[in-house]
Amino acid sequence: MSMLGKYIADQRTTKNLSMRKLANLAKISHTEIHRLEAGERKNPSPFVLKSIAHALDLNFEDIMEAAGYTDNFLSASVSPVSLPGIEELDEKELEEVRDFIDFLRSKKRLKNIT
Image 1 (cartoon, rainbow, N blue to C red):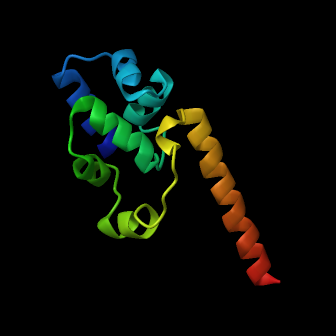
Image 2: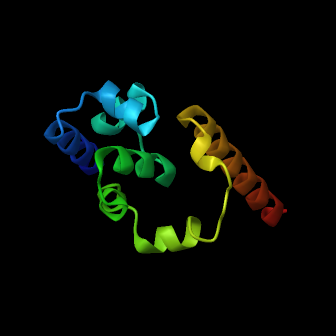
């Protein structure tokens, strides 16, 4: 179990929530909660962590710290970008957005090589 997984599991059990109940409150899949708690999910998006923090009534910065994100990460990758409506996407849709961003990054790297 990762530090983040233990943090989420501890907070969830303290509030007497099942994984499914937390998933419903956070509007993400219970499988995602399981993967996070088991340490199988590496680098969850800040949007997922924000949903979980809100559902558990936690401080967003605390869950980001448990996930290993730093202030530099937040200021460099989250603050300057505004994506209206992103909070309405489910986890699968967010994963597609992350995949597309990874594709764009790899495309840019290839362009810089040639």
